Amino acid sequence: MPPPVFRFAPSPNGYLHLGHAFSALLNADLARESGGRFLLRIEDIDATRCKPEFETAIYEDLAWLGMSWETPVWRQSEHLAGYRDAVEKLSAEGLVYPSFESRLDIAKLIAEQNIPHGWPRDPDGAPLYPGTARALGPEERERLLQSGAPYALRLDMSAACAQAGDLSWTERGEGPKDETGTVAADPAAWGDVIIARKEMPTSYHLSVVLDDALQGVTEVARGQDLFWSTSVHRLLQELLGLPQPTYRHHRLIRDAAGQKLSKSTDATSLRELRAVGASPAEIRRRIGLA
Ligand code: GLU
Image (cartoon, rainbow, N blue to C red; front, side, top):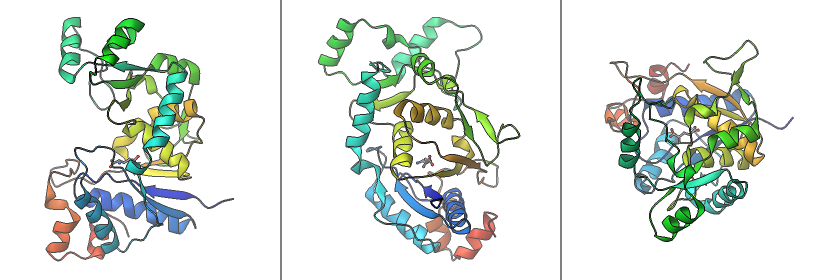
């Protein structure tokens, strides 16, 4: 049996906080205990929010925690051609279509529906895309593409689900799984998700599944907040013929008020804690890692 492969995949859009430290150390600990490998991946496809100084800080903060990882580090911005190929494959199968509405346009389209009990929302609470652009005729679609208007490529969810059939994943963490640790995937709950954009040939969902496959990741240990995203990941793995890792969604570290930590509040950032004299051992204790 080849050794298991774990990864930590932060986005360089802010400084790492205690929640990241938990995820990173947990992955490294699991890799060490199982004789596995530990990889680092920089998820830097959001050009407006990702900054080189945050990437540098990720390396510094993880090294300060006493961590090491294999090099070269996988940086998503260096792998756009592979993402583009995958989008083309989905497109050739008729599973994606361009949508041209802004967020505001979508909100208006939904308001016009006048649904008394509220419009359906995805597991993150965002309203589902109403599917308007799926119904555009080929000429109108071509006209809009030629006009240079911005667009997002969306997955035709019902066609994709029909092609993929029933899906599930093996869960080693918490969550609504059966006694064998199997969770039934429900990608349809996300509606026609965005797979790529005009200016960026990928999305979080697409690059995460491609990279996990290309990096040979066998064990995905990540925060509970991404639990239901796994439904979309399983669907894309199936459509693209990629292997499926095992998942372990872990608890989230919360602040004193019980809120999930965010990058915008730096009270729990590792650099801030280091600056006031915390040691790596104290960080481990604070997040409940022996
Ligand atoms: N880059 C994602 C984040 O910072 C994590 C992706 C994953 O672990 O699948 O939340």
